[in-house]
Length: 253
Length: 130
Image 1 (tube, one colour):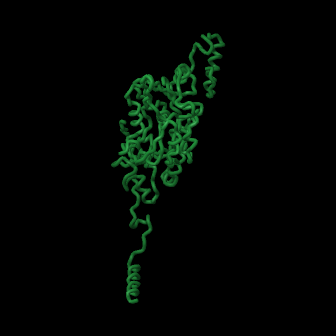
Image 2 (cartoon, chains in turn yellow, orange):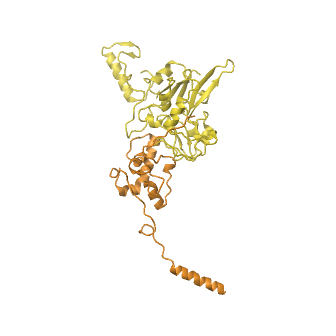
Image 3 (tube, one colour):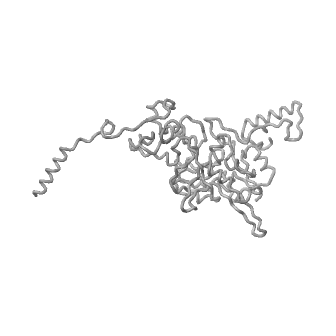
């Protein structure tokens, strides 16, 4: 309740809570009230039909590399099924890659760590900066997307992305999922399963992880599980030196 | 010179014999579009308005949905398919009897929605294991 917050309703609830405490209820400790407000709120809520994505929210992921099982590809499978990524081109390097597993090896002691890597949904996305048509865009709630209606497939964003998160679709497609349109001649990347998030669900990779290594939520909401975890354990932004402020954070790397 | 005169006569005869060109849409040689709607009567606007403005409705809706994140608008390409997909092929594209393609080939307007969007109703993609 003490950290800055843009949601006026939440502020009101906090003020009401403080008022209740002042009326005779005991505050257990500074910042800790007897009645926890906002605890019951789910990780995500379905947005009402007709309402736009809120800039008060910032969706993000927290990935615990210690829990990520070696050789497991469940998150990639789930992503491909959810987003209809099914092409198998003669040159495998041309296949779309929305999420991939990376193995880190410490050369001194040989310790191996695996982690999933996808679009990091930067607060300052370089792909958006370089896009000549405005197709590469960041939604109000922090999800970085490609508007295929205006994408001309120049692949400048692929060059700009330091995380190699984007792919170009090389061949005509027919197996798209109705909610995830994608086609030849456009660049694409992880959408943070925006169609699921808008319905109040979590991304497919998060839901599929058998180890519970991935967590999804609102980074701006101090009451959310993800924000609480980030506030309590050391986490890393990959290539933090670039100051892009990615919305995907890693633990244990 | 004699050959040239013969050619001119032959050409004149050909032009005189060949029928006048038929205007498209007057029930002549051109096949009219097939408008078969699987689930009629549930459209978001009257047919006249849809015929004239469906592209505008979809264009503005797509920008609101993608860029602002507004969901559940009445104009939606996926909702179109649910009623307009052919009963036999389950699609709005692919043949001259399919709803979208039928009209668009008649008026010769390129239809590229379906290069990215799924033209089949209730389609479920299987995905690929890496």
